[in-house]
Structures are given as C-alpha cells and as structure tokens.
Length: 495
Ligand code: BES
Ligand code: MN
Ligand code: ZN
Image (tube, rainbow, N blue to C red):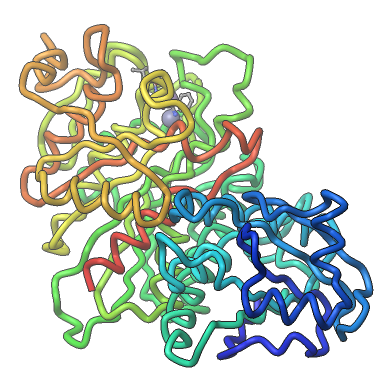
C-alpha cells in the first residue's frame, strides 16, 4: 500500500473514491455544509430519506456524486463521540476496509477527522492503515513463497488531516499501521500454507529471504549442529519425522550501538503437529499446520521492526520441526536430556512445543538479551480459558508481563495474565527425570508455562500462548497474523 498524507481536504478534488467521516449532528459542521452545498443538498436529502444518519459504522455509497469530481463518494457514520475509543475506530475502519475490498476500490482519499475523539489522529491513521492492509490480504492457492501473495495492484491511500499540525502524527500512525499490516500479511501467508509446503526447511529459506530483503543477519542450525550443542529435547521431537529440524536465528540490529543487548523473540515453529505416538484425533487435525504461528509472528514482527527502522536490536529464534508418529519417534516414558542439562520424562508426545522451545530458550542465553518473549500455540487449554479473543501471558518478571499487556491494549491485540506460582510447578514432578513434560490434570496452560520457566531463569521472560488467537474464531479456518501487533508494539515501546 502507498500512503500519502495531506494537510486538508479539497472536496472538489479529482478522486477515485472519496470518503468523508460524518458525526451525527442536528446542524451540519463546516465541512459537512460545504459538502452539502457542493452536491446540491445531498446530505439533507439522504437524511430526509432516512438513508444516512451517521450511525456508528454506517456506510452510504454515492456513485458519480453531482457537483464533485470524485468517481464515488462514501459517507462514513462515526456514531456517538462518547463511544469513539480506539477499538470502535478500528471496528469502523474494518467496515470501511471491507467495503473497499467488496467494491474493488484500490485508490481512496479519506477525511477522517470526525473519528478523532477519544483517540488522536495518530491512532486513527494507524488503525485505518492496518485495517486496509488486513482486508486487502488474499491467500493465493499454492504460492511458491510467502511473498508470492502480494495483491496485483497496490492500494493507494490518501489521508487528509484537519490541519498541518496533524501531518506528522498521521504519518507516524499510518507508517506503524502499515508496517504491522505487512508483518501480519507475512505471518498469515506462512500460517495458511499447507504443512507439505511449509516445512522447517521452507521456513529456514523464508528467513534467508527476509534477511536479504530487510537487512537482517540470519543463521540456520542443522540437526548435527544442534546435536553438538546438546539439544536432546528438541531433536527428540524431530526424530519421528523425515523433515530435518532447523533452528533459525535472525538478528535485526537497529540500535546505534550494535553491541547493545537485544530483545529476543522465540517462536514455536511446529510446521505440523500430529501429536506423535500420543496421536491426536482425526477431526480438525489439519489445523495443526498452524502450529508454527508463533514462529510466523516472529517473522512478521521482525519485518515490521525493520520497516519502521526501530532503533533497537532484536533477535528472533525459531525452533522448527514436525511432530509425527514413527518407528523411532518419541514414546511416552522416554527420558531425554535438554541443552540445559535438565532431564525430561516425556509422558505425552503431544506436549512437544515445550520440548523444542526449552532448548531454543537455553540457546537464547548466548545473546545476553534484555528481555525474552516466547510466542507459541502451546495449549488447547488456553482456548478454554480465554477463547479466540485474548492470548494468555505468563512470565518470571512482572514488568515484562505488564509491558506486554499494555502493548496488547495499544495494538488491540490483547493478552491476559495467568498466574505461574510454585504450587503449579509441583504438578510437573517426575519419578524418572528432573521434569515431566505434562502436568497432573488442571491448569494446562499454566503448567506448560511452568515447564518453560525451568529454562528461563537466566533472563527476564514472558510467554504468550496464542493457540486461541493465531487462527480460527471469527477468522474461520484462517491465520489471523496475531501476535504481530502486540510484539511490534512491545518493540516500539522499548525504543
Ligand atoms: N499445538 C498443540 C496445542 C493446540 C491444541 C493448539 C489445539 C490449538 C488447538 C500442542 O502441541 C498440544 O498438543 N498441546 C497439548 C498438551 C497436552 C498434551 C498436555 C494440548 O493442549 O492438548
Ligand atoms: Mn502437540
Ligand atoms: Zn503443538
């Protein structure tokens, strides 16, 4: 998408599609009066005919409006000012964006000052840009690469501010919205790809492409290299698959001081999770191609950070594997040794995410990170607790957890904290190893995080369980691109 910001709206300008946001009011405002006069009383007529009352999200499209030089005019209702918070602004922008998509609009000029009430122009510009990028997303069947799916024509968006003073804020907001939107597009593409295309090797190649196009440093560790590091837990998962595991490491260095400690993002990259010997039921098993959405959100957030040229250092670490049943696959009761030296009794081979993440977390120690966030489609239990609306967040540092929750609120990609207390940690006791990979019944999302907490003692850490938010819900069988917004905002807030 190409974005242009203008200081004021000239109603008579030549435009493909002109959108004017309108507040409900007994008397027309200055701009509304002007529009009304130019169009020979269009607003009055629509109002009298009961066709437009500026209700929240109301859209009235006028083709070839008399008196204007626009091919079409869209009147966008903003509803009561009291309700105009960022969430409502986003809902209204989503409606507008879907109408663009439905009518094949690819060039629009927007006057959205009426949306500025509880949130500022920066927020309005941001959510509009993100909403349009979101709605323009189209998954192409059988793409050869994640960046194969760009829409043919680039959307041309012109945002008009009320005055010059707002230009800088609108520019900033729309740039953030666009970068997050682009990051989500990449995450959605990777997530939606079938498991036979998006393998660990494919993900590693995508990382190399992303590194090339966005100036990142990339390194991919193969199984031999992981074995030399002692990653017995991660490798026990990939043993049952013909696709070799990869540990993908991407570094974005935006800080002035290239040696400044980075923030680390560690994403679960299970390109297909059949459950292993603890095989999952057949119904909906196809959805386990999405078990790499944590990894996809790391790719997306790195892309956004690079596009925004954030002045910080970020390292993305993605352990990637399949989890399949096989003659040499993990068996319940097997004991493996992790890179940290701790031994793990695998009581359920379907609790594999934590087995690959624990070694990736130990590996991350070498970057001496300021903070570490891991992102994983880790437990079905988080869907029971929080549905598809909210991600679960847990950690060993309340500051990091709070920062993530706040970034989620700003970006409207919400997360809610669950407690990880010592009483839950007891549920992971094993008779045969330092830890079992599943807890006794109850609190499945928390015991999964407790497991990870044994591998994060050397840094400030938080864990996002996105099993409910990464796909499904109102998105249907489609990846959502979440946690890209919350992660990107978290990084912006660290600058
Ligand atoms: N990838 C799944 C989690 C999952 C399940 C995400 C359903 C979305 C929908 C994970 O690897 C898994 O299988 N977790 C198990 C853990 C259990 C064996 C302790 C689960 O949640 O059932
Ligand atoms: Mn599993
Ligand atoms: Zn899994």
